[in-house]
Image 1 (cartoon, rainbow, N blue to C red):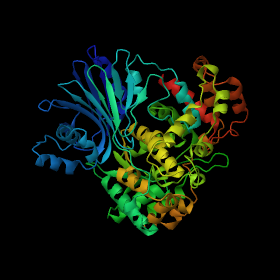
Image 2 (image 1 turned 120 degrees about the horizontal axis):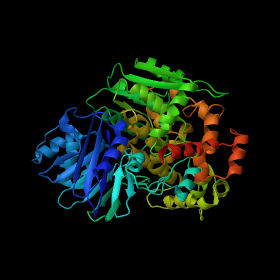
Image 3 (image 1 turned 30 degrees about the vertical axis):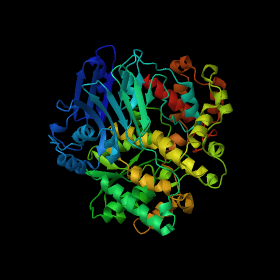
Image 4 (image 1 turned 180 degrees about the horizontal axis):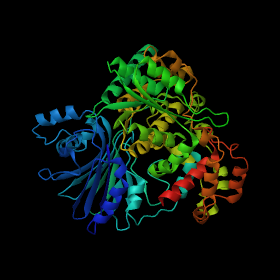
Length: 591
């Protein structure tokens, strides 16, 4: 797990100072080593977190002059041992036991065919010395980020975080009006390839892009699982699906224990993280290190789920650490969490993950986390209304999911940032009309797994953990588990109040009290129920000279929100004022 950056200039030598500035911004992602490599008009920079092969033989950028290849890589290949043995049988010799070298030699052997063989989370950039071509790859579920910045001369800057690209200088950092429309509709999500900034884009998940030496770019999607029923499983019973999901989840959890350092678990007390603990205990793991965080109560809102995380810790006799933090500690961490955000993240638990990761990183470099199960197995409130919808379901999804409709956004944003044609609804309609999903609910689940999940919880966990050099692994985003869930009849997923088939798979492994509890969202009361001092922080940000100069939001609409700061709510029961305040706070710290 690491961070990397690079630049290709078709008509100029690469600027090493640009690479150095980008590398410095990536330092928290890789505290264990750094390197820069340049060759004519292309250069790569890398920051290393030592998880696989702790020796210097695994350092990056990694070059093999005989193969004519140089690579930088962020992530972990869980089947690197098996691939190494296969490559050895084909005549390849290895200088390290790193997964990076497996990628380098695997590409030399199979080219893009390597991608289908990989089990893991990954983003990498690979330079072919002879042609000058740069190949950029992102994993199937977009667990590892990869941002792009086209340059005026036809070149391209790329890297693991948006702020690293901005640190290189010379980019357009104005707000993209279409991205702002998405942000205000989709719980602060901006689907790829856009970001909130005009000058920065991101490579979509499951995409490979080739950038030629002259700047020409081509890309293709290399994984697109069907969300349709499978004839081979047509006679499966609910019990068959339960057993298959249990087996696939067990494999996914086991895979993510591959490391040359100890692995811990972020234990929220919900079904998903509890099941990870239970499955590892079944495997014979004893003394598992588990970690939970909670906050003080604010108003009528509780700030922790310790009753459930403590129950699981006792059940499996884990080495459990519990962190309870007050509002002052939350406020102290908030600016640092915003600094760690590659894009503005409105979800309240971003700061919780930042604070928890700070504590966990004192004793662990790798953790497993339960993100993704709700999107993959249908755990959210907006799924049941789509179950029996005729047609493509886009309008019904918008009615359930969107925070604001187009008319409300037009009232909120200033005229220069208003866009015609309701671009967010048009985006969702286009996504829902893609082939490969059987029903409206399948289309919603596909969109959430491939888009919303990637640019909310997945990105949040990556950014907040890597801010402390902590690698987070997410078993519920194992691509084989996702492929299985995509084929599962939606009714089985939505059963039992959501995630029915996963709950059935967990029965007998984790305590019933955890399985049958009412669904909740990670509680951070000081951000969901706004009062001083958080409310003062938002007011200062939205009335700052930089905010007035940027002119994103209509002053009268903002004043109405401040008059009733907790009365204006998003569909996820967050304060609308926090959503716009967080955006301005992020912009003031990053551009």
